[in-house]
Amino acid sequence: SRVVVCAPGTHGRVVARRDRYTPYARHVTSRTRRVREMSAVDEVTAGLTTASLHEAADIDTKNNTGAEQIVTPWDVAGGADGKIDYAKLVNEFGCQVIDEVLIARIEKVTGMKAHPFLRRGMFFAHRELDQIVTAYENGEKFYLYTGRGPSSESLHLGHLIPFHFTKWLQDAFKVPLVVQLTDDEKFLWKDLKLEDARRLSRENAKDIIACGFDVRRTFIFSDVNYMCTPFYVNMLKIAKCVTFNQARGIFGFAGESNIGQIGFPPTQAAPAFPDCFPHLFGTDKKSLRCLIPCAIDQDPYFRMTRDAAPRIGGHKPALVESRFFPALKGESGKMSASDPSSAIYVTDTPKQIKDKINKYAFSGGRETLEEHREKGGDLDVDIPWKWLNFFMEDDQALASIGSAFASGTMSSGEIKKELIDCLSPMIAAHQSARSLVSEAIVDQFFSTAPRDFQSMFGALEGPPPTPTEGAEVSFQGSETRVAFGAPTGEETSDQNKSDEEIKVDADAPLSKNALKKIQKEREILEKKLAKAAEKAAAKAAAGGG
Image (cartoon, rainbow, N blue to C red; front, side, top):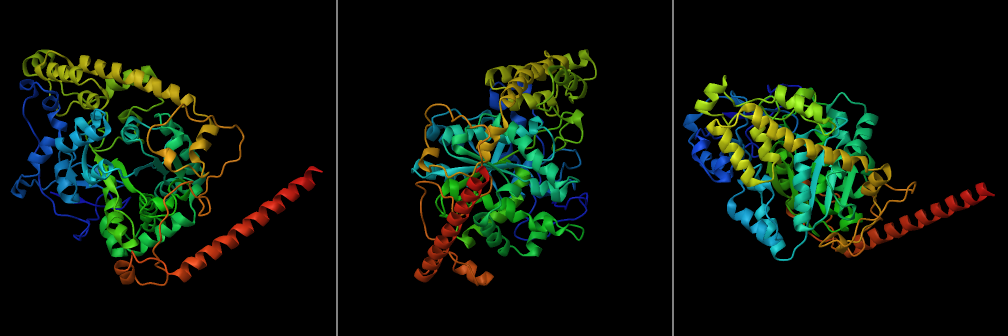
């Protein structure tokens, strides 16, 4: 079995090169044990547990069935059975499975019970999450980074998964978060006007904010609005570390890929370095480590980022990676925004939720009720059961439902009702929260006004500040807007250096003359800005007179 990495529009025909970014494949067979014989919650959810991944990862490649699966940041499709082979992805991508020991460490250091997504293996793989936990145990700070590609008016439940988990991470570790909205990416890959992609960024931001993030330690930005010198400098440094052949091997770019697509990956990689956000974290590239919650299809971006990090003087970002949320009609990769019947949207009414689940949710029940009572339901394919594993918080109630359905005492209609009763109030609560998100609140989250660095970490006191309606807000980053109390450090210089010099000398400090030059340029810029402000004030006064 092999993973096919393809460029958008090639439908899996472009096979990735076997270079260091494309690890070798190993096969894993699915588990078929009857859940009716099990009792503990982790056994009831065996099809989703990390233990099964550890076992499957040891299966020899002689069991290879020859099926292909496609997993790229733009295309996801299962193998011959329509399912994603996650154990194979872990081996091919070179990441690690999150085990019970790591989960226990997270619970201990945060003082909070692990999120159901962690306990049940929805977020199942990582890159150096253990190192983030160790650093945190030693008193080091870090920040979170996640994102969203704004291509639809509203989000479906699959889109909410990373944000629900990121919200828990932020609350548990009490750290800041940056959320990237890739309006530029959607313009480059979709049949979408740039102005529409920019508008959708703000609309999608309202759904993200409705997940409960606190503006005092959350920054949301769209690429088109925020682009600034510190961000672009990191993009350039990353871009210079990656050859076209490497990019083609990682992402499957082909002759029909437009050059905007080929040049985009450094844009998604750059936010993993804190000096992209001077107004939040200051100008020191090593001031903070970064943890990125994402779906496993985003792993190629961050393998590239991690490879470039030490060569540009930064920390390698850590990743915590999730499975795909299965489509309502069956487990075959991602839910599709182009097929409304394959998804539940956060804008759906209770009636729409009920009708979609009853009509379209793929069932693991038998052909007749008599057969179902005799043989029991199949939890490996039942979508209501899989969705309940994501959204039902009560472990005991979940275990009871799983056992009842697997034994045949609970029918398909009854487990669908359990899902309807679980989702309806959750989506109604989201809709209520979103209705309170005004344009002024969105502006608050997008604002690049300098923050107080220390205040973004640890416990927050009182409610977040109320936004001022009609206030002028800047959404563009700037190297002159620097967070108060942020760590300071010496940048490395790569001007006029070759690729090899960057690799070897990435951590070399700037010379005294270079530092003096930077300071002089900053003073000149500040004087220009002051004069511009004076002219604007004089013009405004003259107009008022």
